[in-house]
Amino acid sequence: MPNTVVFIGPSLPLEEAKKILPTAEFLPPATRGDLTNAVAAGAKTIALIDGVFFQDRAVGHREILAAVRSGVSVFGSSSMGALRASEMDTLGMTGVGEIYHWYKDGKIIADDEVGLVYDSVTHTALSEPMVNIRASFAAAKAAGVLDEADETKLLCACKAIYYPDRTYRRVIREASITKEKKSALAAWLETNAVDQKRLDAVECLTCVRDAL
Image (cartoon, rainbow, N blue to C red; front, side, top):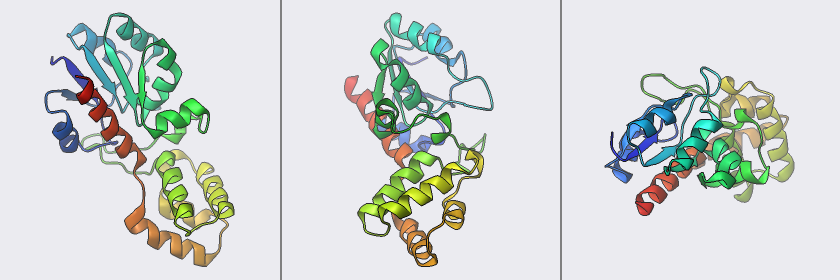
């Protein structure tokens, strides 16, 4: 196994990830025990970006701590990695990106903020994670498409939808904002939606590359 291992899935297309960190080994979203296995196989640097949440046992805190204590550099970002880094940065894990900071600062606290469903073969996202929706609505507000009250209503509607069913279309449909605002927002999102998970994954892999 190469010295650098990256656990990645729907947050960033594999071909894009390989362009940033071509010498790494890229593995699917991590489950419980995968980091332990990577360390045992000789990994010296691990980037935890994507990991399972509800469909299998999630990456454990103890295996991350054991990796760090054995001298492995462990980075976390975007999804499961951001969540675990916010919990373990004081113990040696390195958090990267906006989503990590949102968890660290308490702006978000729930696992479902980064949860989504995806194709198990291609890792293509089939729903929209709430962190991306938050980032997009914040950008729409900054652009004058929404006001603060609209943003709040949209986020409330989003939170009320079970995470596998979250899409921009459904959130907009169920939010209690005017038809005019709904139409304007839908049109704006076609070219301006923010993929915060992707942005954070790129930042994380760039940080790993620079550290190496």
